[in-house]
Length: 291
Image 1 (cartoon, rainbow, N blue to C red):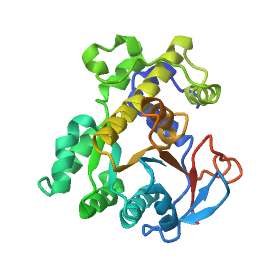
Image 2 (cartoon, one colour):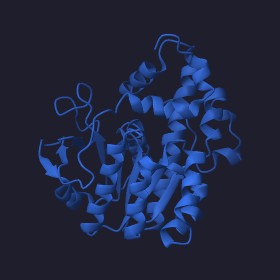
Image 3 (spheres, rainbow, N blue to C red):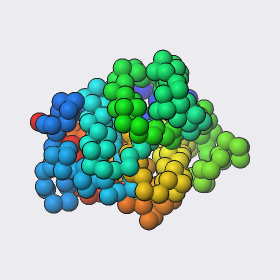
Image 4 (cartoon, one colour):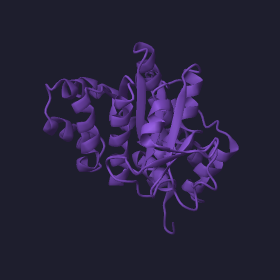
């Protein structure tokens, strides 16, 4: 990362999640039907088909699925998982890192058939920036099955401001329902964030970078917890970058906010970094293997 300017990156904190995600994700998924996909249960080494895994996941309140935003195969897997969850009888909803909570009326209208795809694509592109075509099948699968879509994120200027000035710089209105956040993380997660940040910038810069990441994780966890509290009996499949999906990140925050929620985490296999030989229960519950 020669020539990388930590301070300039902090000025564009919205890109931090994409940078972090690149450290965890790379592997291809199986075909869009999901028929060739295997999930490795990292607790006991069992390999399950998507249909078999869906039977277990249907009994959970939250299923956090990590992705590489730019990998089309990851999104094909997500669409296949959603269909498998519905087929397993789960009252499924899908939580999205890709939309802020303020977009909920648009998402509701899309599922109800009152908002067309073009309007959703326009809003998606304005907020998220990644190609709509990568996610189109996920949205289509939800609309076909009547699966609610839930915006989980905050306005993009919030993590930007935290990265520049720290969490304490946010106004009460900007904080909303996000609890007080500081860079209090375990050693492994801190070491990971420091590897991403590199050697540039001082300790204060790193702390703000860390706070921006935690604001992102915590805000999505709060929104997910609120949805589940208001919709008992639902299974919320949360789609987000693999770094957010990693157990020390969003899943940890969700456990703090709603300790009674049963959740599972699925991460993509990354050979040499996160694979059957290295992944454990501290990372995820299932590792998706590209066959």
